[in-house]
Image 1 (cartoon, rainbow, N blue to C red):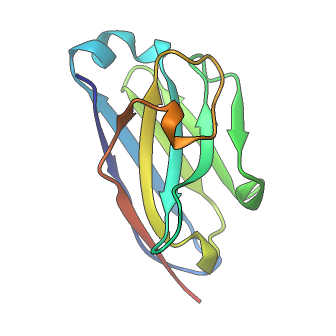
Image 2: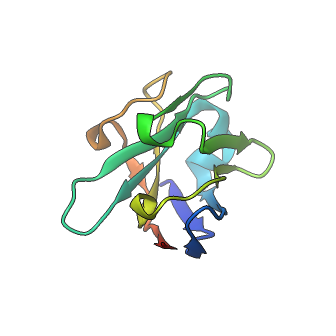
Length: 129
């Protein structure tokens, strides 16, 4: 069983920054973290879950939804079994519950929630305008 735990959420001002982390554990992922495509999704109240950013197994290919391009960056650390979402410039529209997701059967980031098998519990991001 793969377990994902997000952290780093909180309250930031518009134009400010936050860095989210997703730490992976469990026997399967612990030995094979480099075989999983990883992604960040977010969900605001009353909205559908939305793809934010993804990164492939090697870390060499990334994908971002248009609304965060140039403002967010995703990265991974194989030694620590962690992926990061650096939110460099936050907008009020970025406020949401942010989820980490993992999937071993895809080799490039996918954008649908149903494409991912493993999920964390989420970390909340609030942005004051």
